Length: 239
Image (cartoon, rainbow, N blue to C red):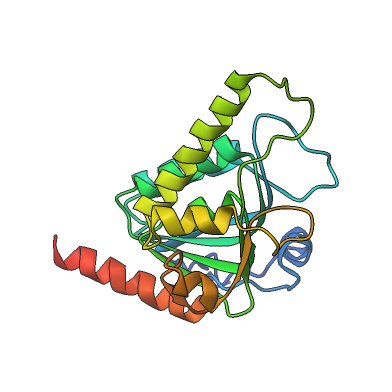
């Protein structure tokens, strides 16, 4: 009786047949059976639905929780295998402080970053969109610029309005310092009347956001990834 001593090559994770559970998970999460095993040096974070702050929103709301995003940003900054950050936005806005916290973290990262507004980057989505090194907006995407609002019971005392003014100034300062739009132009868009049916503010569609200096360019995912790779190469050349 002969014994076959020939060693069979070990299968890599990419070569190993998918288990039934993995197939089911892939279909559930991605809508397809096989997911490519390509390891990218770009990390993608999506800001979708409503940015959730300190108050938990109803379960039927599609939300982005800031306590989920912040650890991801720390991991991106810390991980040497990640060279760049891609932020994809389709958000109606949400909690101002939570949105500003996310925006400030993105702006303070050492890794190159690019954002792209797909669908909508409304309200506090604006500061998040401009927090990256370079920003894009799809042709049909929209951004709404409006004053800060408080919902629910508000005590009508001067201190409340002073707080709102200070919060609004924080948003204006952040946006104008991370984009080409001027303070005067941004406030003009914020307080414009007649454009929104029940509110004051402005809706910018695609190239309008670029023309006022809020977003850097009109483009899609191809342009976003290409520019991010260019920024990564530039950063590598200086090291």
